[in-house]
Length: 68
Image (cartoon, rainbow, N blue to C red; front, side, top):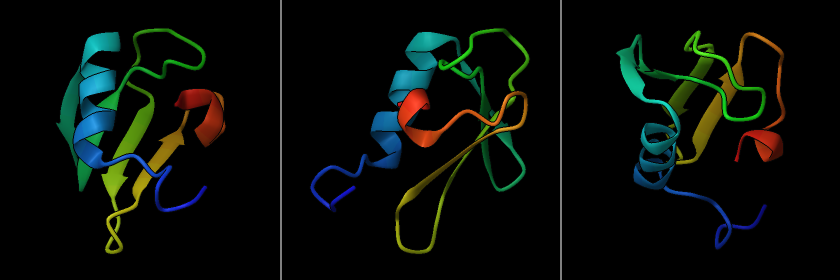
């Protein structure tokens, strides 16, 4: 993914809020994973030091591309 294709944290949070909501979490946010659905807030979202958005699905280990 090139720097032009990288999403900003505000864009990701807006998308996830529209999908099913977000909550503040330790060092970032938690959300419902749009790749597999559900309402368990299994998706961890954070912004790294390089301003790149990090996403980790703890329920099914969904890929970044599937989530976005």
